[in-house]
Image (cartoon, rainbow, N blue to C red; front, side, top):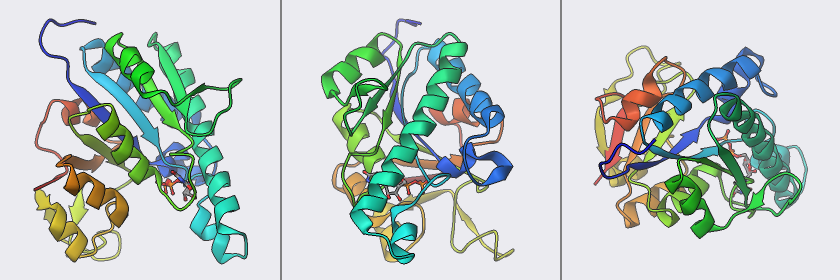
Amino acid sequence: ADHGGPRRRFLLKLSGEAFAGGGGLGVDPDVVHAIAREIAAVVREGYEIAVVIGGGNFFRGAELQQRGMDRARSDYMGMLGTVMNSLALQDFLVKEGIETRVQTGITMGQVAEPFIPLRAVRHLEKGRVVIFGAGMGMPYFSTDTTAAQRALEIHAEAILMGKNGVDGIYDSDPKKNPDAVKFDALEYSEVLARGLKVADATAISLCMDNKLPILVFELLAEGNIGRAVKGEKIGTLVSD
Ligand code: UDP
């Protein structure tokens, strides 16, 4: 897949909820297949793609905590959910003929490689997709923060943050307020000051400190992953 020019590397953050399809819980293979097809297409064009997937279709630590569970233990359950999403995506990418490695923040040798940053970069250079599962392996963090940390460590150009059912960042929730206004671009500081629910503040401030752009876009609109890597004007770009 070598196209001669400088290779462009992106960290694609996928909504875990999107993986559930209409069901809300678990994995809908049709949705995962469709996402894998789009990722495969851009990898064939020579883009290097690393992926982090959320886990909201299985467990969110904070939600389990509200129902009486220990936060750290429920966060580990959340992280394990992201591994299931990672394996599902790996399977469909392999079916598309794309070599794929899952690297996890919690060691589980039968299932995936451990997170080894230099090896991840080597995989990407060889045209493999690398999926980072199990978050950073640390409770009290999110997969958005994981996406920012991994993107920085592998020197990705930007985070492409694919959302489920919303095509960018709005000044209020467009599902509740029909007059909500979409932003084409925002500064990190505005996202934080307005308390916009794009990603958690830890993730946003990590991106801000390191000038890592975030493109927020609708994941499930056909062709959008291709548009996002090519820099077409979709979604909302967060930068400084
Ligand atoms: N999680 C964690 N540490 C990490 C990444 C994730 O503890 O480094 C846990 C946390 O409980 C979180 C869950 O995994 O609620 C699922 O990830 P996330 O909520 O980010 O998924 P999303 O809501 O984006 O689908």
